[in-house]
Amino acid sequence: MNVVSPLKLPEAFETGISSIDEEHKGLIADLNDYLSSFQQEAIGDFDKVFPVIIADFEEHFAAEEQLMAEAGYSGLERHIRHHQQILVELHTLLERCRERGTAETGDVIVFFQKIIDDVSKADMKFVEFLLTENRLTEFKSR
Ligand SMILES: [Fe+2]
Ligand SMILES: [Fe+2]
Image: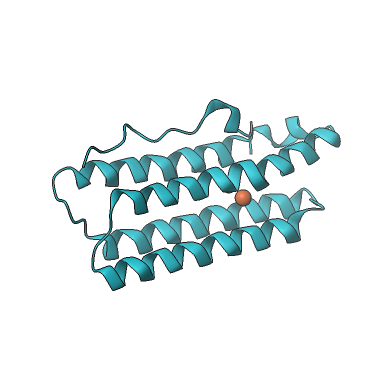
């Protein structure tokens, strides 16, 4: 299968908060590394890799929630539910791969789509909140 060219976070999806942006890019870089290993072996060792990626998502979500709590973000509860929903979906994906005994490129792309979901549906709302409160500068280098 022709593997997609490297996954990339669209520029419009940069929050402007460096720690958050770096974490999104780090997660995507790991997905790209894993995708490139698919070219050598059709079946990846997904059951070793996916749990690690899911743990990295959890770590990223926890860091965001911490930052949002510090900011007194009014949408925090909703954001936490959104993160939990993504994690449930990723665990379901892992279970499905286990049932099949294999993972495909499309499964890795789902992880990428979840990052895009996180940014576009939730993280950007936090940025809007900071902008409304005129506090984005305060969080830029966090
Ligand atoms: Fe995020
Ligand atoms: Fe988020």
